[in-house]
Image 1 (cartoon, rainbow, N blue to C red):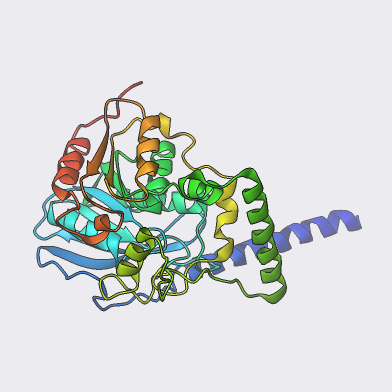
Image 2: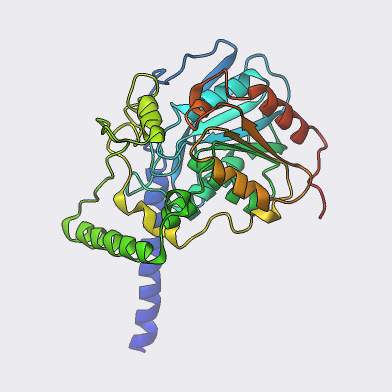
Length: 358
């Protein structure tokens, strides 16, 4: 009899605990501290309206976003969710892309991914192959509930590291009807193999040893070391692409106080998950249109070219911009092919457009 009495009490205690946890999670989702000032690295457009919005992913993390909408827009619009670059915030590159696409007729959001900027999530300054991918689908969840968005006409745009997450999301979420990647990084590949695939299996083993040593040290001390962001000051022998990163993130051109790359960087142990989790495994199964954009002179060009070779169907495009480096596609309006992007999105997100059968 005692056992029969105790078990329901334990079950009740568990239920009450779970309810309290759920309530705390919901309360946490309402406590983001959103800036009300225009604190972007680009000027505000008079052709679009701007507002802050929030939404949550399926992990209970609340994401902060800037929403851009064409002024005097009529009827449900095609929508695009934009994120990236890796280690950046929505006030930088993704916001510029989102605002410019809104000037061209789309309702857009530029969002801070989980653990970044004004978005929620603990610990801070973390990326996750799974959660960072899911953030794109969470943006689709949010956009599809808005009365001013046509839920059948939603696309995504991922920049730098978020280009890889965008492809992964498109492979997993057929609601994404069009995908653009710009100056894409494959974060799994670069973490597991190094730049230009220079790392050996022994190199990876030693990297795992060091990262797990740091992980254990963090557990003991309660302090998670960060990687320092973009190196500053620049060493004399810094590679050209590192100098280009510095020219954006560490100068008035692109610096932002909430940007990990502009400040103390991301957690040093970020690489652990990516080494064993290749995020582009199923991109050959993407049935909806994809436009991949890269600079001809970018150190990262091979990421897009190799990923493009794995895409299937006649609705995939690779656009190489002559003379452009990786950072040119961050904010150089003379280089970023917004006309081509607009044409692609208008075609892919046209009313009645269907995903092709295979």
